[in-house]
Length: 116
Length: 113
Image (cartoon, rainbow over the protein chains, first blue to last red):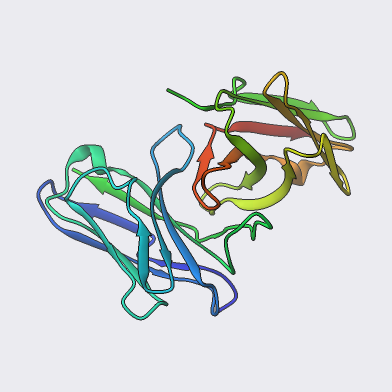
């Protein structure tokens, strides 16, 4: 596709429910990132994949958060037993490569998660 | 603690004038800086970047200035246009990482016709 596609755009979950957020990166992009953006804040790094390998998950807030990219393309961010503090916009981004000749991140429009 | 700080939550300028967005950082390991622009309900889009080996980078109406000794960078937009109205995020990369961006909280720019 032309850009990074995320679904759903909006998700309302009751506290304690599990949710799964999907990201379709730009075709051919090796690197994939998940960021969390709380209201009034900048995006915060969650995790990074290079192809199917999850190279960094240091930003995941707790073990309730899990991300995968099994075939090196589509990625899913799963949040188990959602809590109110999980309410945020979850942004997926992809880039052709990483490195000092930085390939800018292309962000999707995000999934707005509201936990009630 | 906030390693990238955008101390002005909002800025309003007249069309045709210069917009100056500021960003300060505390981490001396940051060596690459980027500006992203975000419209409501959309993801951020890359605008311009600068390496710490430079003090200025220009792309059309957009210029980024870096003052390493002051740990300060700024984005100049001239002339400003109503379509520039958006939230602008400053972001930084550490020399120890070539992928993990640290973002500021953003500044909402409004350009009035």
